[in-house]
Image 1 (tube, helix red, strand yellow):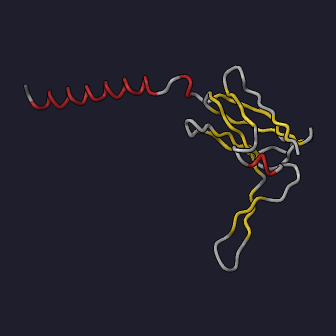
Image 2 (cartoon, helix red, strand yellow):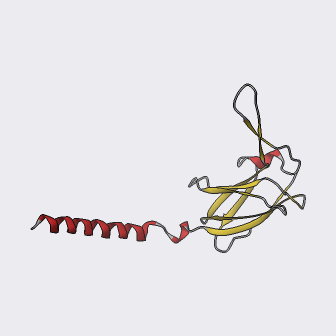
Image 3 (cartoon, one colour):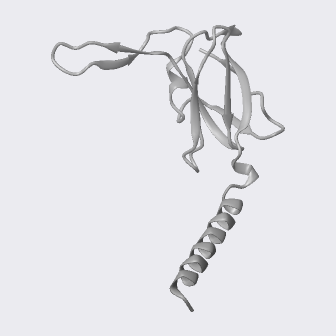
Length: 138
């Protein structure tokens, strides 16, 4: 068998194997699902900060900015997510070292909502569950 034919056959086999892997690589459960919602504190919009979704089993998640009406939009794969809400970060300059990022002091995001261990917030993302509103309490 000529060596040129063997090389072409090997390349063709590798290409077919690669195409087969591409077709089976992502399941429909991995496709991001558009979600939306609103974050409020005592019924009033939380107008600054971020909402963060964390899937502790897979390590997937996202963090999105809150709009001026407390609304957010994101896209996540289907799954169970723990949710936290964080105030905006601000950078505090330091004369003796690197800048220090700190949370802005806000009254409408209580400390307990800043950790997945204490927030008590969660979201089940699926094609049937795309709206996730969170009303924070003191």
